[in-house]
Amino acid sequence: DGGITQSPKYLFRKEGQNVTLSCEQNLNHDAMYWYRQDPGQGLRLIYYSQIVNDFQKGDIAEGYSVSREKKESFPLTVTSAQKNPTAFYLCASSLSGSTPYNEQFFGPGTRLTVL
Amino acid sequence: GQQLNQSPQSMFIQEGEDVSMNCTSSSIFNTWLWYKQDPGEGPVLLIALYKAGELTSNGRLTAQFGITRKDSFLNISASIPSDVGIYFCAGNNRKLIWGLGTSLGVNP
Image (cartoon, rainbow over all chains, first blue to last red; front, top):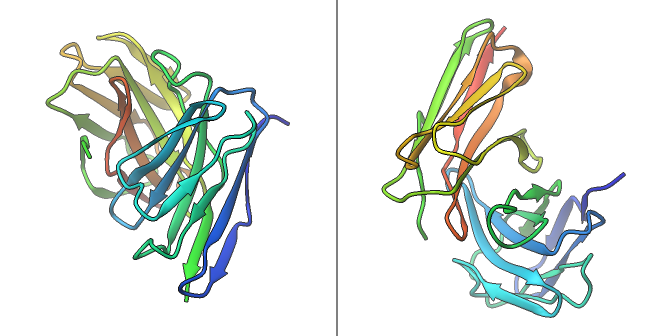
């Protein structure tokens, strides 16, 4: 089946450790996105990539890093510099990064808890 | 970052009732999208709107793209318990701008 997978569903880390969240898509979409969701704050864009080997910062990129070495994969690293990393992280993809194909399709999310 | 005004913030209704929610902005958008998110899951795209004035249905859901291109609404008819969740609007104007969501509860 075509879709977006995120793993793991739940992740626990100690404070000060970097952690990498996985996102894979087999939809042949060019663009991929990472969002952070906190209660009552909706979705906030962390990073996005419109094409392989290229990515841009979103609204809250500080303390995060990404790579886009393959079209199918867009891993997110939450670094120790991120002051409040506990949140629900959502990965999405779209056919293209430009209008009118900006319909984004989401993975199931990873809930990260930093202890 | 920029956000849309989505209302109501939350609502709790009886099964069988109709529901209406809307999003407004001071900016013009080229596309409006409506998503539903179940607890602990990723949002699922319900309806996409591409033209001002467009009215689109998906089963019991109907959404409209406002003629000013600054607003959109979503109606759910004859609500059922599985309609429970958070509904998000998103407007596309070179980037996707998200509303804060409407939390819907349905009393069987």
